[in-house]
Image (cartoon, rainbow, N blue to C red; front, top):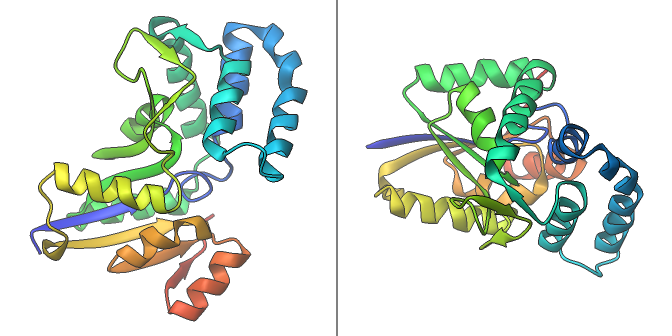
Length: 224
C-alpha cells in the first residue's frame, strides 16, 4: 500500500480520562478564577444535552463561553493552552497507548489524532506525542486573532468524525484503495471510523464497544 495510517481517538483511548472539562477548568483557573463559580451551570447544560434540549455541538460552545469567554484573544489563551498540554502529558497518558504509538511509527505508519476535542488544545498535545496530523473540532475563528466560542463545521464525533477523516484524506491525496489503516478507539461512537479501518482496535472499550467488537471480531486491547 502507498499510504499507511494509524488513526487514534484521544480521550480515554490515549488518555485515561476526558480532557475537555479539565481544559475548561484549567483555563478558567488560569485566566479568570471567578468563572469557576459557574461550574454548576456547566452541569445544568449537560443535563439539557442529556434530555436533548441542546445538541452536543451547542453544549461545547456554551460551556466554552461560560468558562473561558465568548471572544478571547488568542495570544492570551495560548500560554495556558500549552501548560494544559504539559499537564495532560505528565498526568493523563496511558503508557500502553504511548508504546503503541511508538510501534506504529516504527512500522512506518503516519500518525493521525482524530478527536472531538478542540484543535486549539489537541495540537499541542499531538505535537508532544509526535503525531503527524490532527483531525479535530475547529473554532470558527481557528486562524484569527480572537477565539470565539463557536464551532466551525462539524463536531468531530461519530459519523461526523468519519466524514472529516475522509475529507482530510482527499485533501492529502490519499486514495482509500491505496491506504492501509489501523484505527483505535474506546467508544462505540467511533464505530464508523473502526468499520472504515483495515485493522480496528477496541482500545480500553466501554461496555457497548466491547460487545460490538466481540460481534465484529475486532481486536481488543486494554492499555494501562
